[in-house]
Amino acid sequence: MKPLWPKSLFGQLMLLVALALFVAQAINFAMLVRAGERLRFAEAAGPVIARVVTVAERLEAGEPVRPQRFRRRGFVRVDDRSAVRTESHLRAFAYEQRLTSALEADGFSPREVEVGRVDTTRIVPPRRFERRFDRRRSPETLRVSVQLQDGRWINSWMRIRPGGIGALVSIIAQTVILYGVLLFVLFLFARRVSRPLRSLTGAVRDFSDGADAAPVPAEGPRDVAGLIEAFNAMRVRIAAMLGEKDHMLGAIGHDLRTPLAALRIHAENVPDEVERRRMVETIADMTETLDDILSLARLGRPNAESEPLDLTALVDSAIEDFRDVGAPVELEESERLVVDGRANLLKRAIRNLIDNAVRYGDSATVRLRRSDAAAIIEVDDKGPGIDEAALESVFEPFARLEGSRNRERGGSGLGLALARAIVREHGGELGLENLAGTGLRARLSLPLHGE
Image (cartoon, rainbow, N blue to C red; front, side, top):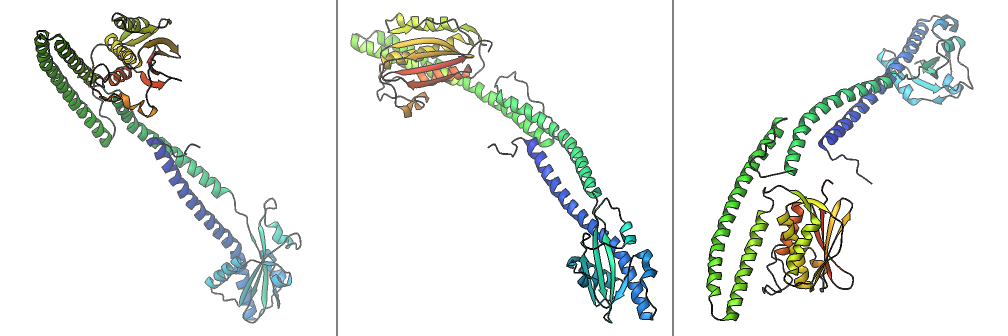
């Protein structure tokens, strides 16, 4: 199950604001509902309080009280018993406390207050009282009994109108308006922030240390603009450092090749043939290792542009170099495949793979095939293979499975590292896998031209 929390800055900001607004509107809605309940109770209790106080004052003054005189305000009767108890109504203690507090706030101190909920299917309220309300709605009918200090009861009726949907509609409309305004404002803000960030992300992804690379425009808020300016300055510093590295590598290559060439001239004059051959091979090994180191260090630097290459012809050319020296290398027939790249680098990567197969696996079988939008080169050998745990570690620079430094077996440990670096620079991938039974397969994939 995917997490609901968004990963983008815009999504997280919108979600947090939405949650905060929802909580605030929920609290506001609860407060409005409570205020509406208090208002409805005050509307219903006001006439009842007025009737009870009026009757109590007349009783205290000794005036006769007849129910008929109060029909315009609703039926009020004076009795020696509580109508709530007599008619067996379900007590509403919350309303009793509210009504007692309201009477006391009006200066009237009742001995006891009872409020009961009326079951209208069992007891019919007074007709005049009933007509005062809209029958299409369902107001709550209550029986009210207030006991005076002398023990007599004033029995009356009270009805509380049902809560309307006006408050809910108001809250929903308010929430929709707030959401719309906030979403619009956040959209403008997020676009102002995310646009320069997307430009910065693209520049980082397509990072190039070329001197002609255009700087990223410093836009957006001050913090984002400062980040972009820091990136532009960092790119300039990196380009300068890599330029210095190239000059240093060029100087090292020149300074080392000159004495190596001189050593080879001297080695050719050694009288002992065995010693002369050994010295020449050692110098050739040092020269090739130096070339591998310099090539690996310079990969990734802008040089010649890629061009469409006939990969089949390139592989055949690499194999011919081995056939000329009698190496057991075989190329299976394949269709013509075209890729984009630099011929000298790709040929070097293919030569390294074939050289490893011939050196450690006695022979090499090369095949080309198409797989979706990629060209696949497979180089199989008949050697003992490699331990599964070491299939990745052999691509590390100077990693060798042979303990010997002898060129015939050990090598410099840079062939596979250089081959993978070249392939990845061309947008491909290089991996190794053990074949069933015996042998090792090196699989090289490159994107086809135009794909």
